[in-house]
Image (cartoon, rainbow over all chains, first blue to last red; front, side, top):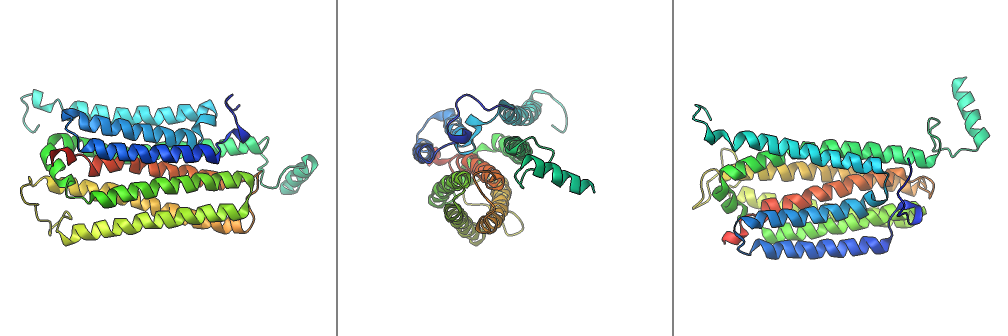
Length: 106
Length: 227
C-alpha cells in the first residue's frame, strides 16, 4: 500500500489545517441555524443535509486523515455510503409506493 | 521455542518492539490498523443507518407531528452541544498530532481537554433529558401529547431518545477509551514511531462527531421554519 502524492509530514495534517477546519465547521453550524428559520418550502431539509454532508466530508478528509490515506481506505468509506443509500432508498421504495396499490394491510 | 526464534529474528533485524512479526514494517502495521478501524466504522454507519431509515420513514409519514415535536427541543442547548462536540474533535485531532510527535505532555493535555468537552456534552444532554421527563415528553405511559400536536409526536420523541441515546452511549465508550489512552500516554507508550492507539481512538471520536453533525439538523432544526 502506498500513500497518495499529496503527502505532507508523515502523510498527516497539521495544526493549521485543523484550526481552519474547526473554523469552517463553526461557520457552517451558524449557517445551518440561520437557514433553518428561512422559508424555503421543501428545500429546508435538503439544504440542512447538504451543509451537514459538507461538514462530514471536512471532518473525514482532514481530521480523520482520509485525504492522505491509501486509496483502499477511500474505497471502504465509499462502500459505507453506497450501502447506507441501499438501506434507505430500497426501504423507502417499499414504504412510499404502498399507497399506489389497493392492497389490504398497506 | 518458536517464541524464542521470533524474538531472535526481530533482534536480528533490529525491529521496534511494537512491531508484530507478521508486518513488514511499522507503516504497514499502522495502515492495517487504520483499515480495520475504518471497516468497523462502516458497520457503525449501518448501525446508525437503521435508525436514520426509521426516522426518514416516520418523518415522511407524520411530517406535521415531527416538525411540531422538534420545535419542543431546546435549540440553544442543542446548538451549544454541537459547538462543544466540534471543539472536542479539534482537540482530538491535536492529540493525534501530538501523538505523531511523541510529545507526551501535549498528548495528555489534548486528551484531557477532549474528555472535558465530551463530559460537557453529556452533562448538557442530561439537562435536556430531564426537561423532557419534567414536561412528560418521554414516550411511554406518562407521555402527554403536546398541545396542538398530532399524537404521533410520541414517535418523534421515541426516535429522539433512541438516536441521541445511542450517540451518547458512543460518547461514554469514547471517554472510557480516552482515559485508557491517557494512562498509556503517561506511561510513555507513544512515540513518533508508535502512536496507533491514539490515531484509532481519534477516528472513532471523529466518527461520533459526524453522527451528531447529522443528528443535530434532523432532530433540532426540521420544524423551525414553521414557527
